[in-house]
Image 1 (cartoon, rainbow, N blue to C red):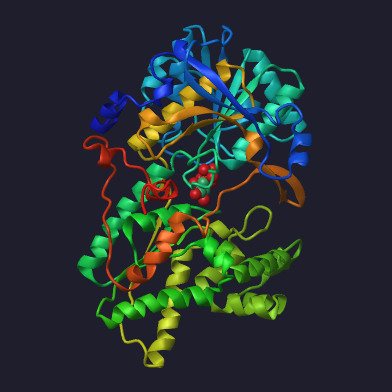
Image 2 (image 1 turned 120 degrees about the horizontal axis):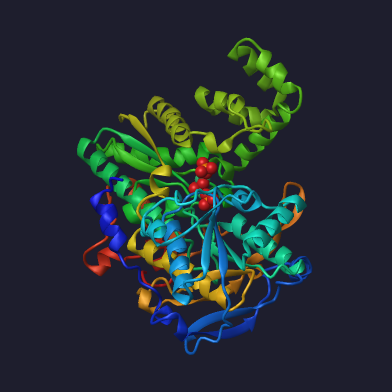
Length: 555
Ligand code: FBP
């Protein structure tokens, strides 16, 4: 097979482990910490996880390895959206497993958690693993979003484990997948299977982080990839001086990606969903905020700019959420067929006008026709509006255009407004991992095997101190139940890992807030450039601005 020179060179890269994991498996021992409690709803979580709740935090350190010797047969699963570095988690896991004993076996279950249920697997060997070292993507075994939740699925998983003699399963995933890992660990423990479950924190969205997890892997590479592109667009905008670029970036439930890209590139505008929700902002208010920047810049002759829009923005706008709820109700059951049978858009529009409340229709009315039609025509199999498909970069560009027309009529704006639209999402999810993600992921996988070797289950592989050089990182494990609380999901109270949203009193947002007025009116663009794999460490191993601000490394 033909491979690119970079791919070949990246195969040779030796990821950096935390100092405490260096020097050989025989010299790694465990230090136990305090017993843990869930972040909220302790009694309920404890009752749901009687076998895995309240376990101790653990840290690895240098010392005689006292783990009992036994053959390990480990299964690994990639779960959810792709994130750069997933392959390295598997490589780190494989290397630690084989360094312990050549007889140990690593199986990869294909296509996500369903691979375990349906027993679709591959067995890794050196040649297989070597072809994926330090590469992006999840194509080594594929990924999927199946949730193991029915009794049938649990039983099938137990059967797969029994058939292969599995001693442990490693689940590489986001908050939902690791919640599932905790549930699976509890099930395996309750049924005395002897199979351990370890999770690894993944997602480019960056919303799996807390007091114990500095950040999820993949975030670093994805935001650097988007920031490179945004910086390039800023240069283009500032060269041509003729377009406003509206750029949507991934991140459905949290705006960490948009915020980090803004901190990296200093655009004129960046919307933060969590702020929109906290201030209960309307679409019109958001459009006004962007239009203010357009006008201020136009007054100086700068009819160009860059605005970053998080993918999930509309879900944070309260009036939009209400509108979506009403549309879902309006088209429930047989109404969908009635609506679809209406011959023209005008007839459909009339049906919508009569079916929505006055307030929601007022919101609907200000949407560009393309978005209006999207809301009614592109629906999921349950008949619900597919909010993630809404082209919010086009939506806001149009809403701003309307605002500017009003201002032009009022004599307060006299500029030009031509727009370009972009969506950066899939472009970043499978990029070659940055050195940071390559190192972090390899460490997470290596560390996951140490947790397995020492008999832990229901733990998340934890590598922290990530703002420092890798040598100073610490490694250990945290019971997943510690990160859980009860939340309402599909009409039921469920134990879940608490999702990390952008904190409006956190250092990254405060930094952005302090600078955004200046960025909105002036041209303060910064150009991060492409991810560098070789060169000075401050260029190649640098972490995200978000992490640096959170850890007080930047002010
Ligand atoms: P995970 O939370 O599973 O990591 O996925 C996040 C994400 O990359 C989002 O940013 C995006 O909204 C979504 O996946 C897209 O999912 P899909 O791959 O199903 O289109």
